[in-house]
Length: 224
Image (cartoon, rainbow, N blue to C red; front, side):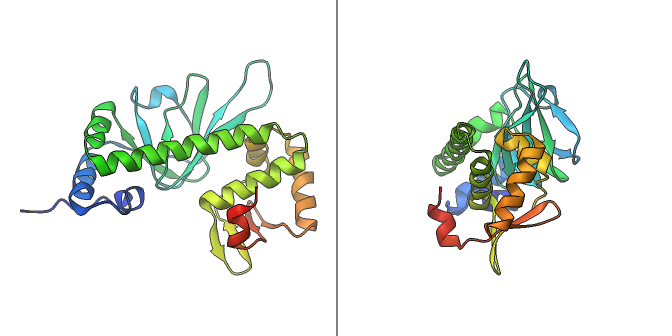
């Protein structure tokens, strides 16, 4: 019997499950459409099929919303390679911070994946992780100190997407002060002052739009 070649994204999304289910999941995902997301271009709800789950194949995307009566936009979700993001709501747009690719998992494809017990467990865990990050983000909005909002968001990004390197944790995808302000519900000017203070205190170093958290992986794991 000829084996279906494994889709590369399956290895990262469904790491640890048995080979038969891996191959079946790869076959299902290979039949799902892939969307090329240009950096900075908005993609609206209508760009995606109803009920679709979006799997980030590579790159990094955010979902932006503009609350009624405000002049600011906020980022309600972010996702890197191997993560799942929901289809944007009516008042939201999806934007790539870098050129990205998304696999659109339709309702029919999702039901086929959920029929695989191990795959279903991983999908549940991934969606639960997305929900936990959203809850953590909402809780951070309640912090009255904008400096602490920025600090906690950088820690969250480090835990979720950071890479351990010499002297700290690298956050390699571009996070401008505007994007960071949207993530924490502050103005760009306030975020700039907060980042400057965090650099002076030795918590973070910044080069362009990328950051290095000057903390150990062990400290990052427990610090909140």
